[in-house]
Image (cartoon, rainbow, N blue to C red; front, side, top):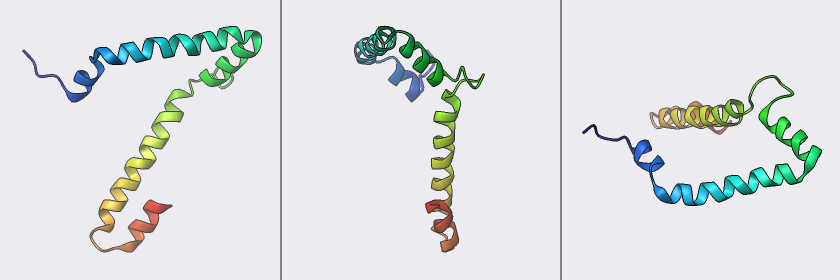
Length: 89
């Protein structure tokens, strides 16, 4: 048997489905019940107006920024305060 990664173990937790399914249905119902305005909001959030999904921008940019700040903070530990200022920026 191949060892599972932590992410695989986490994603296979039954309680996630118990929470995620009702939440997903509620959000879907919110957009549906809002009629044309709901469809417009859904399309805006999905990036239809841009011609490209917004999900990568909304997730990858913050993750990249946090990772960069973490690396700069770690580098600051060597004594160069400039890295700390860059991380804070």
